[in-house]
Amino acid sequence: MTQYTLKTTVRRPYDETVEAVRAELSAAGFGILTEIDLKATLKAKLDVDVAPQVILGACRPELAHQALQAEPSIAALLPCNVVVRAVDETTTVVEAFDPDAMMSLAAHDQAGDTLRTVATDARQRLTAALAALENN
Image: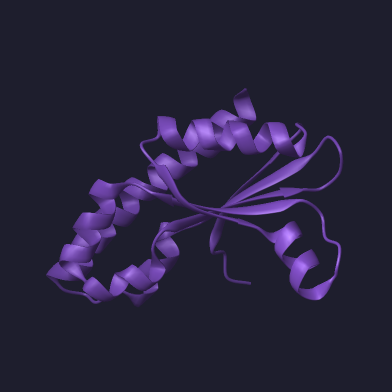
């Protein structure tokens, strides 16, 4: 199975975790550009009930700009999606798209080298944010 996310499980209620994720992403230099409430969307569109779950579209503008300068089509993979999903009343999973996963799409040229640098930076920041969630 291909690993394409960075993941942590925290012993914290969903709503509290969503706020903590926002704070840790901000501390790592990311802003939230988009937010999709999957529970509400699936209820409205399909009348199905799922556990509380939100997709946060996180972006660090400096990294996005570097990536776009190297490869304009990389915009299709932006922003970095971070999912916060309730497991039960006291446990929440947080997953972020692993920037290293997009490197399988990158060329082996100067643009690819730039994308690798951007992906490494983004991955380090996301990993640090997830680790901070585990420790707080």
